[in-house]
Image (cartoon, rainbow, N blue to C red; front, side, top):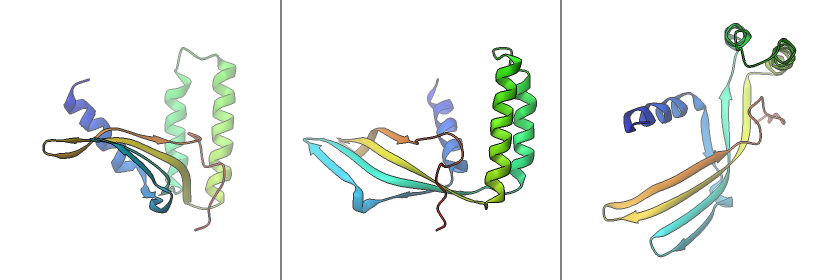
Length: 133
């Protein structure tokens, strides 16, 4: 992957991700020389409205054609995700996912730069717990 493709991938993730909030009070920062390790709890909040029904149906259209999965696997996934979509969207449009942020920051001649960062989610589905903030 070239740097332009990587930039495009990261920008696409950030633009549609939601509202990221780092819990600065829980942040852990450790350093050794010109390297800093950072870890913090965080949340991402996103409003997902009724348009998600149509988005899910579009996903199903492409998912059905996946030759790597059996008909049974496809049906299980479609039923699980479809039921979850209906259930969750009827509970409200505001979704809050808990996550863990970690990073390595390195001091270079022109300043501090992220050498690595990671956002760890406990799930790729709707949040297991819904916050009412």
